[in-house]
Amino acid sequence: MKTKIITIDENNINEELMMQAGDILRQGGLVAFPTETVYGLGGDGLNENSSAKIYEAKGRPSDNPLIVHIADMEALPGIVKEIPEEAYLLAEKYWPGPLTMIFYKSDAVPYATTGGLDTVAVRMPSHKTARALIRAAGGYVAAPSANRSGRPSPTVAKYVIEDLDGRVDMIIDGGEVNIGLESTIIDLTDGQPVILRPGYITEEMLKSVVGQVDMDKTLLDANAKEAPKAPGMKYRHYAPKGSLTVVEGAEGAVTDYINRQIAVAQSEGKKTGVIATDETKGGYVGDVIKSVGSRNDEEAIARQLFRILREFDDSDVQVMFAESFDSPGIGQAIMNRLLKAAGHHVIRV
Ligand code: TXA
Ligand code: MG
Figure 1 (tube, rainbow, N blue to C red):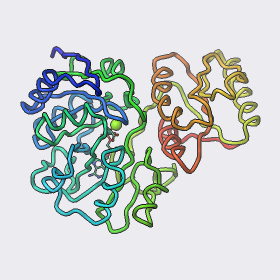
Figure 2 (cartoon, rainbow, N blue to C red):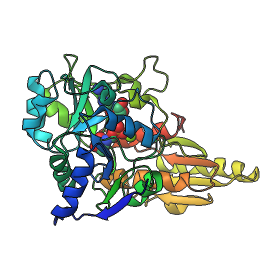
Figure 3 (cartoon, rainbow, N blue to C red):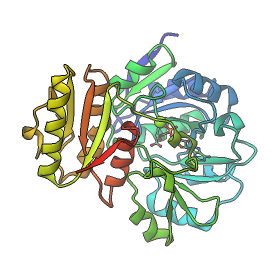
């Protein structure tokens, strides 16, 4: 398949190109597009053949459900059975934006889109190109992150092209995304709202709107016996080719520990790497040292983490260490993605 690659500026949308993209989706084709979180791989969410094509293009297991993207609140009743009160409150505050809510699905949504589940994940993105595309496509765009399964989510079109060129009809280049981590997912189908995937919309932000919110326990605990409720969270994602260990502790102790481990690995002839911060970068002795940004700027760390993981993925580094980024805010989402990349391999010093 020849992939058409176009550029659209969200502040000056080329209507002609947007219509072309919308037509591809209406006809059952696939279009990768920017959102404020990460790039998405879009298909018509109400067309089971389109969803099947998405799984195929990504190389994704078909029990891992897709998020249906809408552009307007009026579109929601068309795909869900009921809308709980919390959903209205959360939508009022955080839609359009990086929040996905899980509802019971209506018959309009094929099981091919929900991975066989009776529930459907719905998000209303704020990115103007994404919103225009959803409208041009007829209102419902199913879109997982636009990476091949198992790779970090793409934050620039270059990585979408790397993963999906030749596998989709069109890729829309909209520059670098704003947030860099996938949306927060909250399940509203089980009484008490539960966070299934942490993201830019934090636990505190959700609690401020709906009171009590639970966190899926499997997310931060490597030894949890149950499977995570968001099927996608059980897969080891973003796994770099080398081994990755997250090191927690006070700044100096972390640097010392990592440097000692690096010396051991180097003495065994292994190439080493460190995911550091602007503040600590100069203190490491490894072969490849990359900073994800300043520790004082969580948003910058969120935006850069997937790019750094991809860069390590493409390198021949065999033994990697990362500092820990735990914090009550976006740090939860950053740590969740980092722990997945590390296969939950954490050391406390
Ligand atoms: O920010 C985002 O959410 C991006 C952009 C493109 O919108 N999309 C995204 O999609 O991250 P994806 O497919 O990579 O991740 C969707 C996650 C998966 O972990 C999946 O298992 C979960 O959402 N999910 C989808 N539908 C679900 C459902 N009905 N119940 C539980 N989890 C669900
Ligand atoms: Mg994904």
